[in-house]
Length: 77
Image (cartoon, rainbow, N blue to C red; front, top):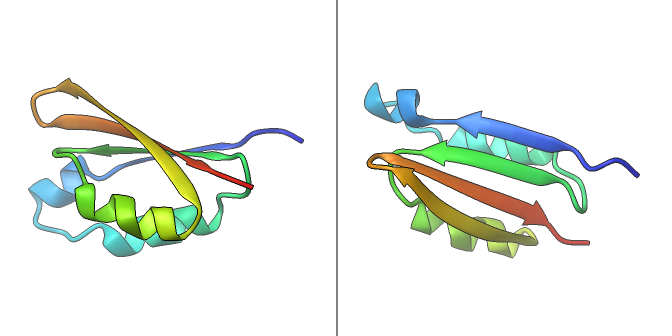
């Protein structure tokens, strides 16, 4: 089965004071087991880690540069 990668960048939304939580929740609905969801955010989105962990995701966060975090979430079967 092919692994799907869904990528979402919420940096602009947050810059414009738009709360991206709903958009993130919509995006992860498409994520199946072993798929990957990549999130780009201006800070380390720690509260999200617990929310997605409860939905079966593990994550790896890396700071690309100031105000750019790339978090790779993997859905576990």
